[in-house]
Image (cartoon, rainbow, N blue to C red; front, side):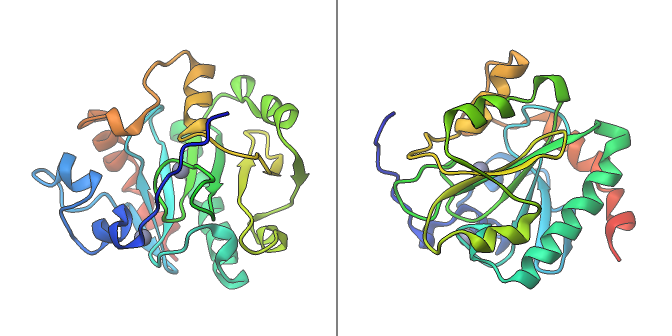
Length: 224
Ligand SMILES: [Zn+2]
Ligand SMILES: [Zn+2]
């Protein structure tokens, strides 16, 4: 296990800059000439958008507008809204992309890894159940079973965690001593036999634009 220090500076938050329409973020660098925003829907203080580094088509992020470091730092009300949005979104996505798994790097301390973004985000990843690497995680790390996102409030304040919900709907909170950058993305890519897991090395992707146009129709369905 490495012990590289990831310096988190909220003044340089990728997502806050992107949501404010800035240019100093990974989205703008790749797509500003083509599209103004990658937000599919915005509701209850959250937005859903396709992830840079579309390991699979339909790979989304659910992101709070407010700069929380982790979902566990949100209020129960916000977590309840997130849970509802997540359920609504994936129900509608199922016919196009199949079942999904979910994960969040609850990186609440600078040295706890994640994917290099300090702004909370839940990964929503369409994935074949038989390739879900969940058992590998259960073997590797201390684990606690939870029933929904609201249970994240039970985690000790300030403690880092990894939330993972398998394709079959088992929901876990893991406590890895250290999570290397993009650990889960790499694990998922490996399970699918894909080499390109590092989103930072992805340029402009047709797949992201396809996901954006395919899921944009969900706007009308999920929005209530
Ligand atoms: Zn932010
Ligand atoms: Zn992440």
